Amino acid sequence: MEIDIKQFCTPTGYYGRCDEPFTYSGRTYATNGHIIVSVPLMKSVTTEIPMKPESLDRVIEPINNASKFEKIPAWEQPPKRTCASCNGTGSVARCPECEGSGEIEFSNSHNSYSDECKTCDGFGAVHGDEIECASCDGKGTIQKSYPINMGNGIHINSDYLLQIESLPGAEIDLSHGPESIVPFRSDGVIGGVMPMRA
Ligand SMILES: [Zn+2]
Ligand SMILES: [Zn+2]
Image 1 (cartoon, protein in one colour):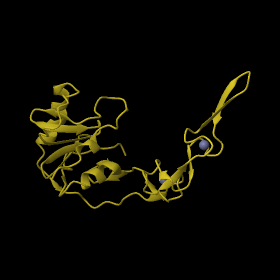
Image 2 (image 1 turned 90 degrees about the horizontal axis):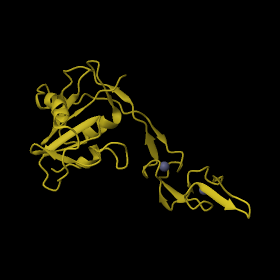
Image 3 (image 1 turned 120 degrees about the vertical axis):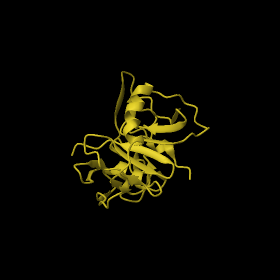
Image 4 (image 1 turned 30 degrees about the horizontal axis):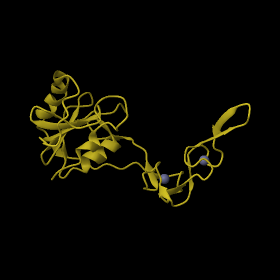
């Protein structure tokens, strides 16, 4: 099964150069600096390693040597709350006053002014069903990320746990404690996630 490896990259446009998967030493990697996965070489990925190979080696060595894998312990998902931008509907409409920019500009013969749009409070969107709500990606609910206690002093960000759990048959190695990267694996996938300070 081919996984969507790009979901483990830094979102495009953020600081850093890890917004694309890359190939190194016969495998293809994706990381955002907190979580890293590697899969068997993907021929479509030709991006070169964006960091010093030694830095990557240091990160993946404990992952490659991990051996105490177990099923991910049961954990409770943090509560979802209704998205305030769309009132839970998942859709919004472009603001008719600022046309989505969140700002109003006006000028007279002396000056030009710009101000936050009062119709949408600067969000650029109002209630409606025209476009997908960007605040909640159309889901209608927002789930804040949360440190989840996995035992052995290890806390993992709930967002990353959800990502790991979405990999088929995912297993995790919790034997190394809260100071080291936490290895995980799934069908052909190996990876690691940095624990959070709880
Ligand atoms: Zn929403
Ligand atoms: Zn507006």
